Amino acid sequence: AQKITQTQPGMFVQEKEAVTLDCTYDTSDQSYGLFWYKQPSSGEMIFLIYQGSYDEQNATEGRYSLNFQKARKSANLVISASQLGDSAMYFCAMREGLPGGSYIPTFGRGTSLIVHP
Amino acid sequence: DAGITQSPRHKVTETGTPVTLRCHQTENHRYMYWYRQDPGHGLRLIHYSYGVKDTDKGEVSDGYSVSRSKTEDFLLTLESATSSQTSVYFCAISESGTAITNYGYTFGSGTRLTVV
Image (cartoon, rainbow over all chains, first blue to last red; front, top):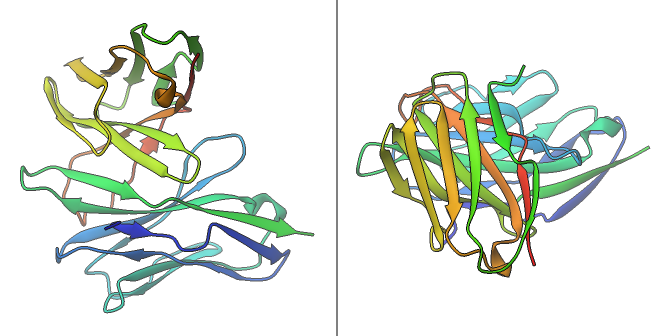
């Protein structure tokens, strides 16, 4: 079973509108971290936002917010007031602990977002 | 100035030849990771390192080996390249911490490898 599921291979949004990118995760740990990364067509991976499993408030970073619903195991990314430069691949990731004491992230398959003018 | 660099950026190699990709960091971070990115699969972990000479396998480690003889360098070797290893390879680094510590991952620019 996938640890990170992004069910939307592609999404379209009109410029200046808000868009939600879905992410669900699977873990039995109580302590974990959730991330979103953006990958524009140039290929670099850009960190957007982080949410810890014990954080009670949803994380926000500028126009990005993470809608964290712990009971549903979802960590959706909300982009407000979309801009043309938001067109990119978006990856959700989760970090959890391994039996040996390391912590590694697992990434979803990504959602391609296209912003229309 | 990037704290992490990958070399080469592009490489074309023939089936059956060994290939080594290099990841170099100047951040003194403990953890280093190698991922491959393929359409429809996202990023999949190949190997990771949690210290000098301390490495472990990831999800897709078959056909790959790694070495970390010093903190700043993490090498990925394709022992005998196959066409299925044509991909974009990313290196990433991170500090130490726990699952919930607020630290992220810094990625290199990627290496596009084509095996013909």
